[in-house]
Image: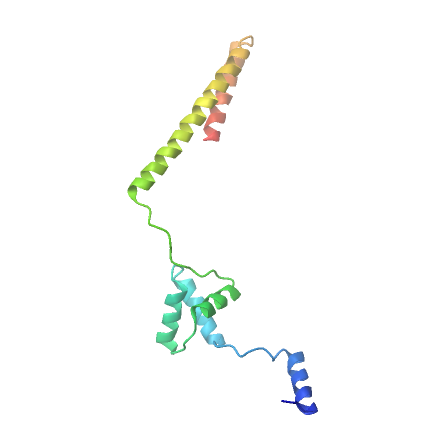
Length: 143
């Protein structure tokens, strides 16, 4: 299919104007609908937003279109969780592990503090009290 010179000139003008892109499926009002609904309910998924648009406006768009429009507006689309839900025993085990790590840190700190104090015995008693106070203060900052 050969194009005439006139058709080629029209195509060049469209490309220069930036109108050669494919027509968007959504209008500016639809894009605003996506943004407002997402801002109203931050935890709604892209599928829910797509279904709301179909109910309210009757527009049929894909989930990818919704995600793309939200990204263009600077928002992040929510996707439902895919992993297994953590049970109570998982949380208990996690807390126990964290507390063991804290106890280990305290033990290491107390050992290093004892070594530091035994090396500083030659100092006056007031200076030892100040050093003890500083070590205890630092241990609270570490945790």
